[in-house]
Every structure is written in structure tokens, then in C-alpha cells.
Image (cartoon, rainbow, N blue to C red; front, side, top):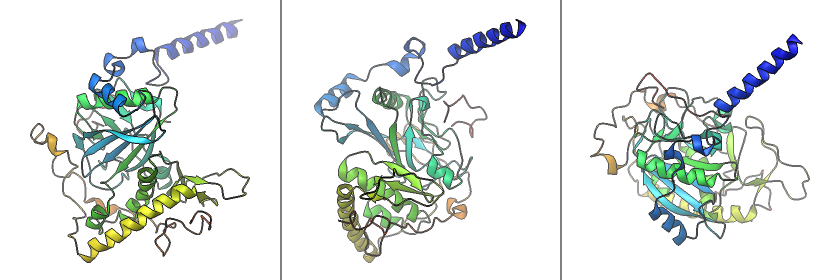
Length: 370
């Protein structure tokens, strides 16, 4: 009797606690969400959606570029392909060019990330925030750690991509609408636009192999205008993989283990291969012309779009960490780049050749700002 009463009391207490503490940020009932998280898109942006034949609730892909300090929102139109909707200047990002390696290095992440509803925080201490979900499977397989890496407002960053409050209000609303009935959206974070000219300038960087790996996913997206499927095996990214012909086994990827036999969708591989070969010819011309190489280490802690320099003149400072390249581990060579320069490898065969939580208010300014 007493045990039953205690059990019922615990159940009621747990139920009340569940009602007071929502399990997901975006999953809170609308009457409990702050107005900034529920407001409609601006009329000009709604008009732009209509002009571009983009349904209001269609999926999005977010692309981040550190060196250019720009955030792009791509949205799926009625044809099923992604088109560029709007480019936002980034107010502040921290660290240097290159991926995040460890907690406290102030690096903003680079790579492919999946944002689920629970990573959307309407009650962020940075106005609104979107947690990138770092570390992802690739980061964990490479023993990288860190937490609370976000796109947020407030124009202040310690490992994040910071926008103004006005900007994050739009980006958050676009992300929120795209998650209606969908489990996630993709974020692609790059050091810069992965053009032959930029890669040639950064040819001396110890991150070059990593960036060339990211470029494969970038090229899949740009040549097909479809979101690339991202898997991880052998501690590296794999894009748009599918079982080999006549295989009846589903693909199973172990981020730290050997990759299974797979092929890349032939149509995607063909388009990406054409782009890669053209890019490599242009890259070789830049090297032949001896285009000046960028310094490996900038000496600054991040950057911001020039649009904001006058408004926030002292937000970009001298770096507060050791030169990034001094402790950057080297990844092994990328196995799917053949000697003939193709995207395919011996893995692909002949046929393809033709739980994160919402961020909490962080103390200990400034290192805890993200």
C-alpha cells in the first residue's frame, strides 16, 4: 500500500516535471514560446519566396563561409531542387580557418552538420540560437570535442557564427518553418568558398586535405542542387553512397571503422567529376602563375563581414590561442582521389566511374559566451 502510494507520487511528480521542462526546445507549445521565436517572416522575404517558387515550409540548406563571412540560406523550390534564397553577412566568427579540434580552442566548426528541432533554442541568451550539433560523427571519430557551437545573435562569438539579432530572427524563422514535419536540415560549414583560386591561395595550409574532402560534398551539392547524403567511415566523410550493383545488403557505416563496399550515384558522380576536373585545371594554372599563398596563421581571432566593421569596430582582436597550425593533426591522404584525378576510387568500381541539448545561459564572460 505504502509502496503503491510512493510509486504514484513519483509518477505524478515526474509528469509535472515533464510538463514544466520541455524535452525539446522547438517542441514547446506555441503559447509558451517567446514572440521572437514565433513571428512570421518579413513580407519582403515572403514575397521573395513566392517569386522563386519556394513553398514557405519547404526544406532548407544553410551554408557558412568563414573567410567571406557570409551565411547562405538555400531553399527547395517546386522542382525539388535547392536554389539560393538569401545571403546574410556574418557579424562575427571566431578562431582561424580550419576545423574545431578541442574545447576552448575558439574555433568555429567546419564540416557537415545536421540540425534537429531540439537544437533550436528560442530562449537563448544570445537572442535566438541554432546549435550545429558539434561534435558530429566525423568529429567524434577523429577525437575532437567541444560544446555549444551555434549560429546565434548578439554579434559576439567564442567558437560560433554570430549574426545580428535582426538576422538571426530571419534565419531562425526559415529554419523553424523548414522543420515542420521534417526531422532535420543540413548545415555546410566551410573555411571559404572552395574555388580553385581560394584553394591555390591556401595551398600551404595543413588543412588542405581536409578542405579537399569537404569540396567533394560541396561539388555534389553545387552540381545537382540537391542535399548530399552524408555518411562517415574510416574517419572521413562519404557523400551520396549507395550499395554496389546486385548487392542485397544495406550499407552500414562505422565512423571509425573500415568503409563498406559502396558506389556513388553515377549521375551525381558524373556531374561532380566534370566539375572537379575543370577545377583542377584551373587550380594548376594558378600554381603555374605562382599566385601568392595566404599565411597559414592569420594572427587574428576570427573575423566579420566588412559590412559590420564600422558598426562594431573592436570586435575582431588579436588571437588568444596558439597558432592553429602548431597543433593541427594531419589526416591521412584522401583515398577516393585517384591518380587520374577522378572522384571515384577502387571502392566505387567501374560502374560509378562513368543528442544534443539546447544551450544554457553561460557565465564566465567572455570565454563562456558560446
